[in-house]
Image (tube, rainbow, N blue to C red):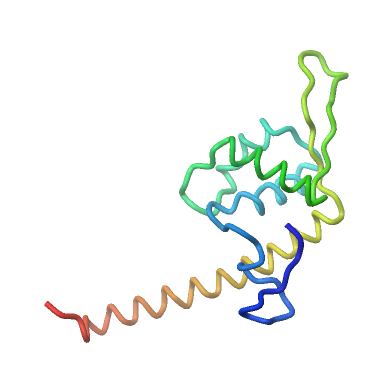
Amino acid sequence: MPRRICQRHRGDQPCSCAMGNLYRFVEPLVLLLLKKKGRSYGYDLAADLQEYALTDAAIERGALYRTLRQLEINRNVKSEWETDQGGPARRVYRLTRRGEQHLEEWATVLEHVSKSMARFVKQTRKSLRHGARGARA
C-alpha cells in the first residue's frame, strides 16, 4: 500500500487510516516474516502466521494470498516461480527495498496504535474502578 498521509490527522507520519484495513494485521506480519526469512513460499508463510499474529483471530490462507498479491502490485514484494526443485513449481516471495520501507511505516503505525490502545485500557480501567458514574439502572 503506498504511503499516504491522513487528511484527518495531517501529521507527517503515516497513520492507521493510511494503512488500509487493520483487521488481523496480515500485511505487517507478511512483511516481517519475509524480512526475517529472506524469501519464502506462501505455504511456509501460512505456517508461521499464527506464531506472529497480533490478534487471536485465525488468519485464513485466502487472506494471506490476497495480501501477497496486493503487496506485489504495490512493489513491496517480488515473486518468481521456482521450477528447479523436484515436484510442482512453487511461487517464492521476497521483500523489496520498498517493502522494507513499508515495514518501517507499519512499525510506526503500530507503535501509535499500541500507545492509543494502552491509553484506552488505562482510561477504561480507571473509569471502572471509580464505579458506574452516570450509568442508569
